[in-house]
Image 1 (cartoon, one colour):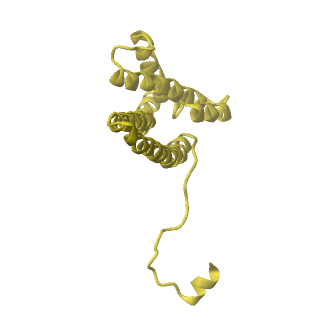
Image 2: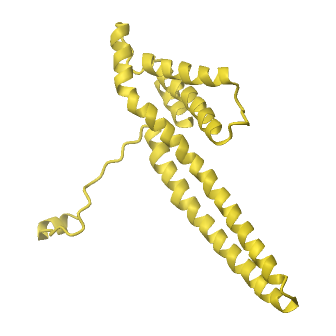
Image 3: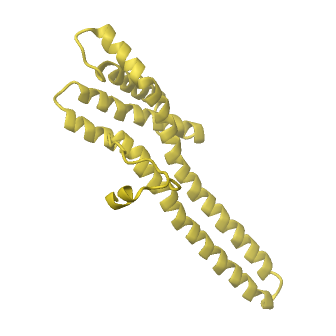
Length: 189
């Protein structure tokens, strides 16, 4: 959402800035949809506001992605160029929800190991050492997995999804690890 706001600021006063504002509003609506999928009884956004964000945001995107004096051309070009990004927005939002799921999984792993340690400790005073060992090792592993998750999921989401919404283009050279390079190519680097 912030990437689209930044894009809108850069495009203002051109009419295309309204399309970027539309994407931001649409993303708020999409977050509301995903929230309803996970927590159907806990709405943080009234249904009329949710529909307004989705419909209003999408209308701004359709109408102002390709501003023109011809409204039919404007609408058709907006529809054709934004159909896939609209579906992609849902998957991007679900990807961010995955971070919540990783945190929730970490909680349940910790709870399972705590329960295991309590069961071991109930075997007598001699078993407390094993219970303490289970707790220390399990929570150390859980924290290590949490650190890996931050890099594996958070960096990926920021690098790919945020940067694509910010308009960053990734360019480079083809990856060919087993290609035979001539001496001239090796010298060129």
